[in-house]
Length: 310
Image (cartoon, rainbow, N blue to C red; front, top):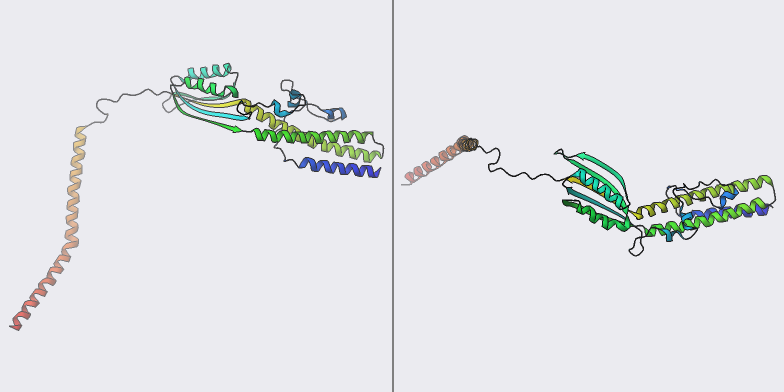
């Protein structure tokens, strides 16, 4: 019996190493259906009635077949767009946007209205529409604008990420099945009651860890499916500002003021010239006086020398 429990401990260690080989998923809990563990007393949360789980929808089949894939090469694309529209009437256009969302079977994520610097109404709204009607929705939104000021679209391919999650989910489900089989075997075995209870508790602990990872992976898969199934469009609705005609005479035209400004500049020019003359008189005049005195003495010395030679 001791050998049997040693083998059980080794099996639990092996299953723990097997489940840790896959990278840990980020915590994104999602509901999952009660599986076979419920038969053995495992407390597994049941899915909400209005939001069936992935495994129930797929009937145990491959998850990838039930992903929301785009028509372009079967890839899962998260599509987003940002539009800035100049419109004649922001309030009316906003109502038309809401009617468009309803017609396209989408929904509004957020909507905000505010006043511009000219005290005109503007709005910012984020909507989501089915990805297969993404281009059609953009075309309809452009028609609502007097002018499309800016537009940008982007797409994020999450197919590889989804496939990786699907593979990790299969591995975790296989681990869960092995643990459940091991739990049945321990319960049906005969031996020391204390050792048997400890083994069952250890298996329950591992089952809880594996179930948590399964729910996290399912939550990430549901998030990718939801984001790829519905495209996100962010709209900025700005009012069309009326064009103001330029007056024949520009505001502020005053010939007398211009004449005074010109006279002021002329006086400043004369003041500058006087300042230059003052600087020349103060700085340059002594220099020229000294230089002239030196030249005078040199010339006088030359004349005296010439007279002596004679």
